[in-house]
Image 1 (cartoon, rainbow, N blue to C red):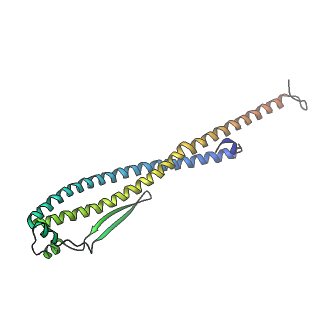
Image 2 (spheres, rainbow, N blue to C red):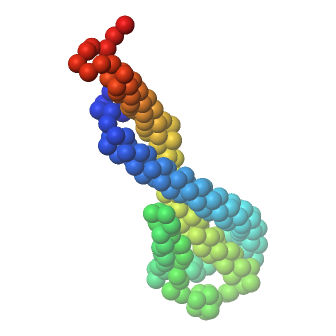
Image 3 (tube, rainbow, N blue to C red):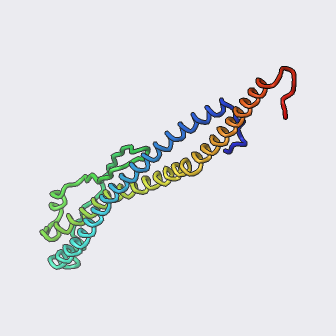
Length: 213
């Protein structure tokens, strides 16, 4: 957009002023939206980092408990120890909308209890049960982490789109409108000045005689 694209009239000037108001409102909305998105990204990132730390701790704990289980049952005994079946396990997904972004909370719903799993073992031990429970915690934490990871990807994508639109309005559209308004205002002021000068000269000159020096 530039001053040469629009015929400088009062109506065009008013219309462009209204357009500037609308674009300013759109920019303010996008600016607020990107701030809210950034805050939510930081919140989700904090949860992701905390869960990642917990998952790392669980990994070390699982390694220690697996070593203890092998020490109690031997490698062969640990291999044939009844596993916790996840056949009836379902992934529960709860969704919510945040500034147009779908945020999900993912959680595993198990179809078997620890008592059922313990009864299936003919030589149950606290070491093996603790090992199994720790690995189950790892799977559960991984499910939560997967949901947050997806949220971060969607939030970041929406933030980039919003940032790009906001910058386009701030650095391209609004400056072009301001420049066009300035050109049109200057042109209309010059026309008003010419009209004023012409009117004064006509008023001072004798009727029917041309004005001039």
